[in-house]
Image (cartoon, rainbow, N blue to C red; front, side, top):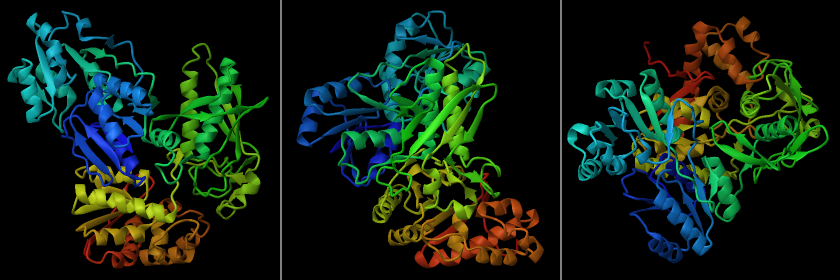
Length: 596
């Protein structure tokens, strides 16, 4: 059993990740005021001292503690550390991602370090800290306190001596600069709260207005914790410390392993060091450690796909780094070459997709930031000795990628699911969505499409968005079973053309794009035969966004959506079904109403 301390954005992320295991756990907050819908987690509230926490762990069979509470909840962190040590329970600290400290901010260790001449100050350090600022107020400093607009916070502010005229509330439509100008402040006081704490937004607003910034440094983390700073790292740490919790183990993508090998070889050649593990920053900003190895001329990694049935599992991925006058990423032996248009890299280039390229570039730049005397660049060659043979067991040959595998990965991590486990995960997420957004659920294929849809439906809670992967039909059936009033299906063109052709399961191992059916839809949309003939060399559906005549794009979108609706509606006959088609730039296409 796992005990998770949350009440934060990190707590939500951790809970969402634990829900996927289908196992019971506890989610603890101090006040119980965080609105979170859980299916397998049991919510508890109230502060625990060391004795209460130890008793709870013993009586409930807790074998792992995850601390995802606020970084300044020092008493809680120390209590968790003490209990973990006393009961020999492993503990994970889910940290936030912190921007680099800059010299234009005054960094302090304690409130007593705030200078007396700070002028009028806006304190955004939380309602619990008002009492610590009272000595400054009694000396005559004018202080405004930024707090949550809720009764418990207002009462606590009053109890510590703050007047109503000093309270400034957080509102969703606040403009930080306007708030600061309205109050006429000289100094902004805040905590080193990380990216999810709004640190960058607040400090940038203050910089623009020429306001002094004082930041309280985040407290040190007790040594007993296994530290992570993202949901992927947390899952992998849970898999390591409590292997029985998840039914299947996660893995890492070829893009992540290529990045790790590049960072390792660059580290050796720039610093003369050979670390056994190197940090890799994933696309979501979190950092994970990856085991690396070395040969005379290159560094390499051994890919682990977890329990995902992946033909690349166990392969060696190499990176050779050389000093250069310009930055470059090339493919060596076993990395395929793109020979047809439609991919996110040009024809003739190595099949190293856009996200892995960016990962390699970003991580190398982070390394170069620590070499102030080096003004050059690095050239990086990625190779996979077994790649050419392995590629024969993939779709690469029919997609026009020759000579090896592709280096891929959107998130950097592989979440393994058997079909039954994946559908069960969808069901759990749909049940959570039903609890938090009982009438409307937005289903999507993955992280990229979900990001665009969250912007489109910004008023919906996070749990209203559910990933279907490839199991569109199963997801619709679950929505029907749970009696959602409205389903919005977001789909990108690659899956949409498979769905439109009648495939409610769009997995590439089961179905590929039916070009004849696609050309038929183009005719329905009004494309003439000459235009269609010019598109017969496409290898990927997304190429159509650039190939369909611009004046027919809406008609084409209407046609695709109409076919998708005809396939999907029978799976959820009593639900209102809206279908949104998403292009690669994040534009969302709706079907026109008749007469438009």
